[in-house]
Amino acid sequence: MGLDGKFVGEDGVALIEEYGADAFPFTRERREELKSMDDAKRRGGRLEELLGCGGSICLISGHDRKASVCDDKRKERRFELVGKTIGLYFGAHWCPPCLSFTSQLTQAYNELQNSFEVVFVSTDRDFEEFDLHITTMPWLAIPYKEHKTRQDLCRIFDIKKIPSLVLIGPNGNIISTNGRGLIALYGARVFPFTQSRVEEIEADLRREGEGLPRNLKDPKHEHVLKLDMAKAYVCNSCGKHGRFWAFSCDVCDYDLHPTCLGKPFSG
Image 1 (cartoon, rainbow, N blue to C red):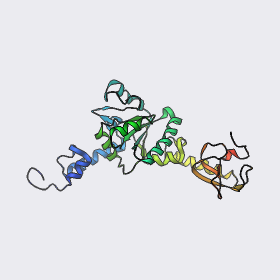
Image 2: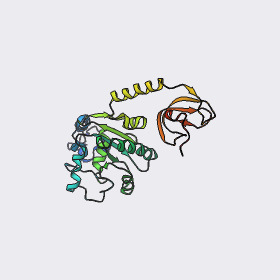
Image 3: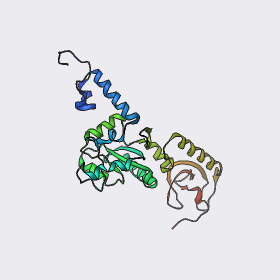
Image 4: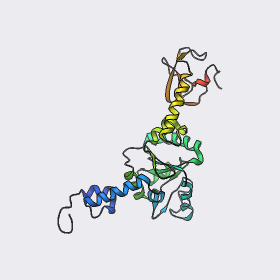
């Protein structure tokens, strides 16, 4: 209800949950204004607008999480993001799929090194969970105390489930909101995460598959192996992880890298 006693026509509770004090005076016009501001940030907001706390970029890592939140060292994190592709990683320690995806993302992150930076946006239930969580991560994180920044990012990018990974290009534009799917399926190979790169990978995979037999026998296994496509598997010959093409057994849980055909068991 407004100062004139008239009903403003908006759900004030929902507005406050989404925008906090910024929702005042809780009118339809104010909601539309706030939505427009979110859209502008999502379409190509500057890093300091997306990640800022108190007007400056404030990021931490597992190595300096005990330091003060906005000291000079922390502000220098801004320069680590310039010219890079950024992944905003939304997750929580209590979520088993997040722990699994963190492992996949870490592998891709380590392979890409200086070309790709990740910023963790915590949805952990308390600081202790957050503190424990980021010690397992090699990248940066928004401080847990910056609740508004974390909440704003979840709202701006319409995060409905975790883990989620939003990919932002060096120019500030969104590349993909399905970073999780891209990393899980293609790993670091999909960088810089564009649709054209996905199409290149798919074309390469088709060519690779055309050069492989559909069925074969290998001395290391008693059954016929069939060519298959797998998101991830562990080769029973070399013991290493694999993805994409594999020779698999329909009878038992056995997978083989195409490059391990005819080779003796490792170890």
